[in-house]
Image (cartoon, rainbow, N blue to C red; front, side):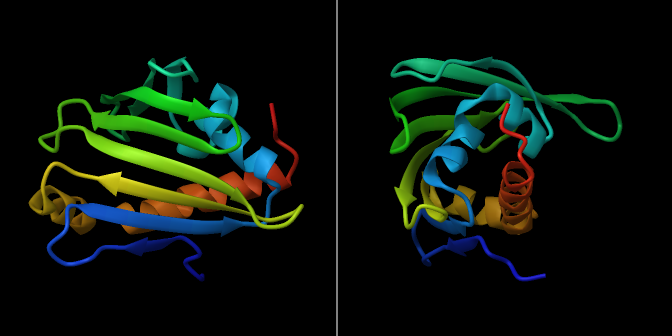
Length: 156
């Protein structure tokens, strides 16, 4: 299957640029990041808190195949509906520490939109560790789920 999500990692830098064009209107794509019920479906996680506002925060929890719970959290620094979300992201109990994420949403046509994620890690070593995980495949699969769910009319 074609990998539609592109991940650009420049050598010696502590950042990633992730881009994906979706066959979805901008409003639907943004809902995938804004509405807890949709986030739960495409991320396969439980949303314990999602405060979509400047200085808001979020807390997600997932359960691995062994039954262990893992938390993800962050602070939302900027939230402009349909335009951008700036936030931190941290996996609890992981050695990576928090990362900074700049998500920008762009309307391409009435039926197509684009997401650009600029992710900054504390060091290029941490970024390289993340890339050794199944990160690229995982984000592509997650983006595929967004498109599949929203194309099939699951918008609430």
